[in-house]
Length: 69
Ligand SMILES: [Zn+2]
Image (cartoon, rainbow, N blue to C red):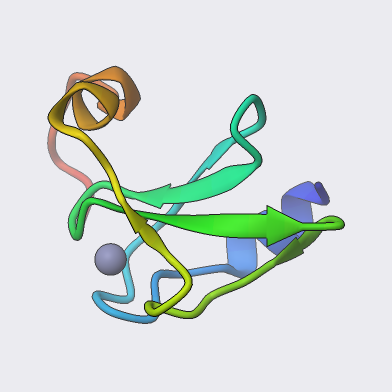
């Protein structure tokens, strides 16, 4: 997926940054614990389409530092 496009994307719920998970083909919001699907390279930014992340997935995604708003 396009990096520039990715930089423009924010979570519709919290307006926070998203983390692209290439293996899953999903965009993860760690704040809400939601994974938005990417279908045919197009992010589906709908909360009703998102799935809940498990605790394990949230830990795996965590950059291990704070300080980002
Ligand atoms: Zn969010």
